[in-house]
Image (cartoon, chains in turn brown, cyan):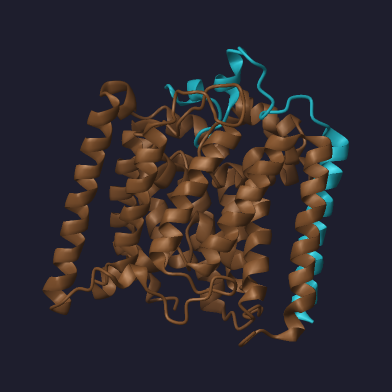
Length: 387
Length: 57
C-alpha cells in the first residue's frame, strides 16, 4: 500500500486490539446498546479523520479567505440530519423499545455567551469538540494539551452552572413541537439553502468563481487510508448521528463526558463535586455515581479516539508533533479551557448544540451557530498572536 | 519513543476507566430502558446537561 509505513503497524494493532477488548467488555458488562454506541464512535473517529471534517479550520478558511467548501459541506450534513432526525424524534427507536429525545435546550443568554466564547476559543485551541478529540487521538501533542484544558474548563463550567442558568432565558424552543413535520423540514432546509447561497455568493465575490463540486472531490481518494471527500464525510456523519440517536436514545454529544471525566478526577484528588448544583441534576448525578463506562457519551468518545488512532495509522501519518513552543502551549491552554467552559454555558459544543441541536429542531442550535461564528471571527484575529 | 508513550497513555486511560467501573459499578444503566418506562426519556442525555427536564429553567 502506497505510503503505508510498516513502523506504524504496531500502533494500528494497538488501536484494533483496544477496540476489540472494549467491545467485548461493554457487551459483557453493559449490553448491546453500549456496543453499538462504541461502534458508532469508532466509525465517527475514522470518518472525522479521513474526511478531515472539522469546523474550526473550515470556518477560519472562510473568514480569512472566503473559501466556503467546508461550510457548504456542513450545510449538506445539517440538511441530511434534519430530515433523518425529524422523522425519528419522538418515535420509537429502531433498536430498542423506547422513544428517542432530541438535543433540545433553552435559548438563553448563557447560550449566546457560551457559544461566542466557544467559537473564539476553538480558533485558539485549534479544534472544536469533535476536532480536538480526533486530532489529539491522531498523535498531535498540542491538541492533547487542548483536550486536557478542555476537560478542566468543562469542570469549572459545571461549578458556575447555577449562575449562568439563572440568566434570562426564552426557554427551550423546539420547531418540531411548534410546527408539523413538513413545516419544520421545509423551514429549516429553506434557511440552509439561503445560507448556502450566501456563503457561495461571498466566495464568488472574492474569488471570482466557485466550484460547487469541490466537496465531492479529494486528491488521491482512498477508502482505506483516506483522504475522503468532504461530501462523503458530511453524509456519513449525518447517518452516524442518526444511528446514535437510535442506539443511545439521544443524538451525538461530546462535551458532557469531558465534564464528567474532570469531575471523576476531582473526586479522586478530594474535591467533592457531588455538592455542586450541576452534579445534583438527575443525569449528571447518576453519571457521577455510576461507572464512567456506563455513560454513553464517554463510550462514544472512546470510540472516536480509537477510531481516529486506527485511521491515522491506516493513513500512515501517525506522528507526535512535539514542536509546541510557548506561544502554541498558551494557545492550547487558553483555547482548551475556554472551549470547555463555553460548552457548558451553551449546552454543548459544535456537535451537541450545533449539529445535534439543529438536526433536532432546537432553536438554540441556530443561536449557537450564529454566535460561535461571530466568536470565531474574533478568534481568528486573536490567533495571529499565537500562531 | 513518543508514539510508544502515547499508546501507553491511551492504555492507562482505559485502565483508569476500567478501575472506575470496578469501584462504582453500574447501579443504573442509562441505555437500559424498560418497555413503557416513563422515566427513561427524562434521564437520557440529549445535549450534555442531562435529562430534558434539566433544560427547562
